Image (cartoon, rainbow, N blue to C red):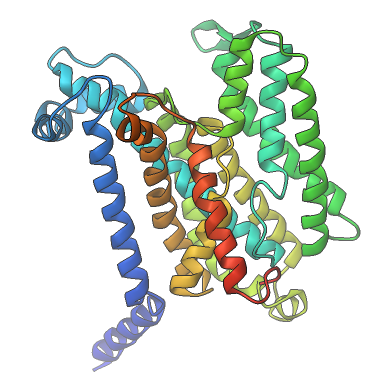
Length: 391
């Protein structure tokens, strides 16, 4: 009898634990996953090395790749692909599929970062760009490209030293710049603690200053190649991404995802206001700072591999919120699915839009496409809602 009662209690607890999983969330996640899979397959079909749909499918499902640990070891840890991998499979798996994976990781990080910042500041207009993370990363990248272009660094490691060009370390500098900019914002906003309003205002100030410094640095760039590389970073681009970018972003994405899923309840409590949160026993300042660091890290991880991609961190939480509501247990999971779907669709437009329109295999930065998608959608939200601002 006691065992039956215990089993019933565990069953009730399990049901309560997942009571937030409803039909709208499941359908949105399944729909987003379908968009990612179909969009990824479209990406593998088109390119300089043209294929038929059948050739593309054979390359994607090639057992010499999918079931070969030596190949995955090369993908995940670096190295050369075995000679057993054919030309078509090599093109698809070494160049096209990694771009899809990077788009997925960038979409996850930016969407989750935006959701956290909007909860921490209790402002639905907050995003990594508004709070200075994006502009700080962009400024550091421009500074490195313009002032230290061509410089090398000697990096010691276990078996000796390695000489690395500064350009190969741009992802590291981007992450450092984004996180450092957030700490500057937090320091400016601090006055016996912080508040959502002060964080937003400080973020706007820091973003404006860094954007002005970025424009100033363009005047000192004498090499057109440096200018083009800087524009690609500050606009947001997935051109040239491969498994190296996947290896850079994947660990941070896994850590951020785990932390955010565990912290969803804290995000819900923050939305109740500081007084209510404190009455429930929460150390508001400590939780706000910790979650803000997680959001800044997520944004920096995305910027490190794709540059500054606009609007994703702003509009994806809005889109998910309109579908599933404001419960962050649902909102965070929805962002983890809808963010990648938006990025994959945007990258199809960036990579293949001109090919379908004019027949020219010419790519544009994905940040331009996300801006073209996000701008009109945000205007639609403004027209639909009578009041925008505080959550």
